[in-house]
Length: 409
Image (cartoon, rainbow, N blue to C red; front, side):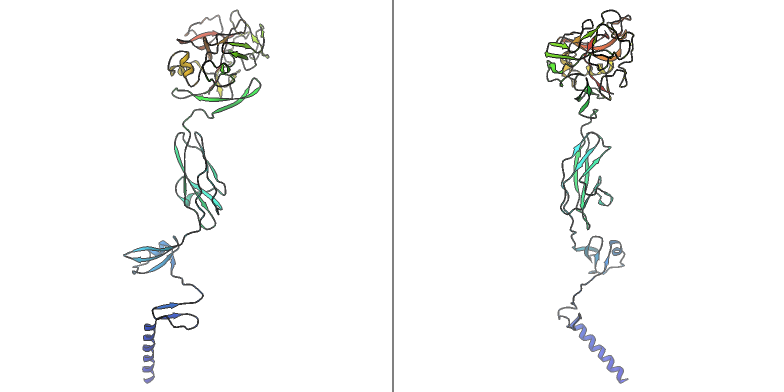
């Protein structure tokens, strides 16, 4: 009994010493500092409970002052006022966000570009500000986004990352090009045996249409209504680009054929030479027998236009004329097409006439009795014709020569 009493008394004394001095945890027995309840020293650190947000939220009835380390946001957190508060949070050594480069927009796509970030081992992009679902782009700093709509603004979010973490997102903003029916601002093709590049223009019609910016054979797009370098060549209706149409100009009213003439009619769709076929008797056609399908559509037998383009129909040309500010030559030149008084070539001698006086443009539409000049004994095709005070449509014999302007199919 005496021994039990002494043991119990010793426990009370030890307890009082602990409560009054605090607890020390160390390797050399150094007592706790008098100001501390728990004094820990040594060569290792202190780990407080580590858990993610879901586990933290599952703690039943957390007491005020309870502390944890949140592994989701890498923050020390404590509980007070019935909610969890963030204390000190770790900052990830992420690369800096990439900066925007120069983007290349077109009608239906954007080529996005951004600059490199120091320390980045890769980049991710997303159309939403969500890194978790972003697409890894590796070390490439460009991305082509397709399937877009013309004339709209788009945003692409880009992050830089390293082996540890990622930067904040940079929002790249770019609009696609204004809606255009022309797939490209230029068209390169072979004409008269040489590579040429023409521009494209959009009409004012509804719906819009895409045309070449000059007549076939023109050395440049028109710079004025008297720009003879933009007159171009004069085709006999239905003939291919075989050189017969070639004309050179020395000024706004003087042009000369490049090649000679012949009176021998062609028995086939392809004459096989570059000569102008003169014909002054009925049916006034360069071909021995009529063929109405030579310039019909993009797959027309003798379509002289670049791939994907063709001669316009009469209705398409009339739609254009309806948008002109005035129904005359001034209105024709004032349109996006800048149609000109380029003159014509007479079927009887092949010479060039009427520059700056009047002109016609061939259409792919064959002649018919709905328009002036119809005579069933002649092989006719329809031309749109304009002068200083008029725009009209007439039948014209196919051996005549007129400029050609191509339209996208």
